[in-house]
Length: 256
Image (cartoon, rainbow, N blue to C red; front, side):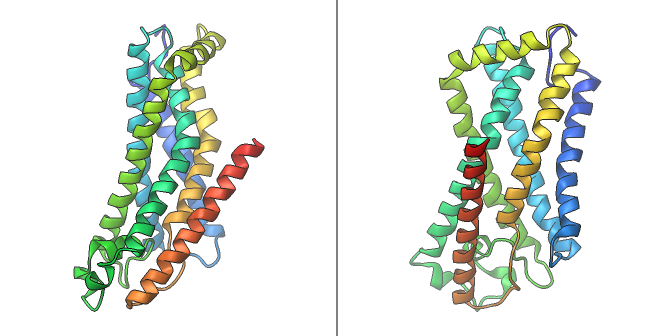
């Protein structure tokens, strides 16, 4: 192939699989280093929310890159545009996702009707608002319904943030096109190397940092208890943890 394509050929498939495996291996490694360790079932439910969110984010990035490639008269390759979109995704996109997640938790915590929708209903029949606010808690034994509500809320935040990033890329396309064309020029005549550079090499560290930050937000910290005040209290704690992670991420980007 003379031009780097995101969805053409076995090389593109291998690159995407490699990115997924290498990214989530960081979370698997973190599982055995964290203290106390989450039970395997709880860890799997936490990580599965990220898998759904990452899949949505990856699909959004591919779509943004392909649209930008064709909208700019194809002067830069899809791979170069994917790198541009991915750079926005792992910086502005992560911040926007956490801001949206915090805003939803805060809105649910402060909702006047929250007390009327909370326990003593059995957890299998509790309000979706209670399940979302109690982020990272699935019950004992874990309840799939709780996980589904939390996964849905997180995916909504991810897709919304990526859509906003896509809008930013569209507005700045004339300027970003210069950078994309320059990246193509560096790898001129070597489209497969460019493909693995933008899909594996550079995203590896950025994805690992992104997933570890998200894992800190999505996992629970305390044992599940059954009163409204305790759930609201944990919601406030999660908001504080999310804000701390957001501050750490912002400081890391500034230092970089």
